[in-house]
Length: 246
Image 1 (tube, rainbow, N blue to C red):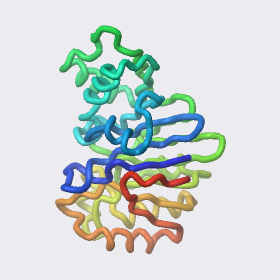
Image 2: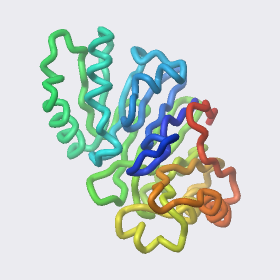
Image 3: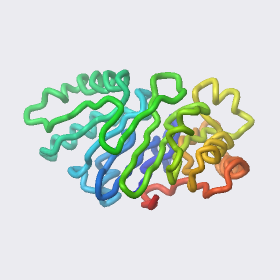
Image 4: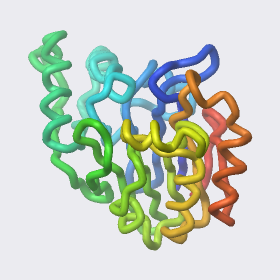
């Protein structure tokens, strides 16, 4: 299973980093997780034909995770896509996504490709609830050879541990260091230390950290050190557009 990150930033973009958005792909399935920045351009830069994308997962309706949905649909329509696209999310977020598309009259475009709005489960994709300030889903993606878990935005949450049992890798938000855990947790977020603790309890081999907030998380090295203090496996801050095999 191939994992390619297009952004790892939290709510605020930086000069060199976009909001969290990444691709999970293998021979069986090609899935974009959340949609920020320039999704069609991201796929092209990664050497992936946007026309081959099978599904989009929207973890929740906060701006930094959903705002580029109209751009993705509009671009694929202009490219004359005829393959159906599945959009998978929890019911609340699906409704917000449809409302966003309606602002641009996208769903009434002539010859628009088929969009299937799917609640929670599709083939190798399984969503589960996490602890954030709006209805939010973690994501489990499985194939015949591998399995990964994405926490999305969340405070420490037992559903992540349950979902991650038997998985090779956990992608977990790490918005800041442990000294800010009270503030982070009350807002539905986690520290690097808490991400490491989740990875240890889940028994995964690799931990990918993301959702760094440039307002607060100025020291990613410290976030990594704190993650490693709780987790003996490999801790990775993803390099954008690098393909990781999981």
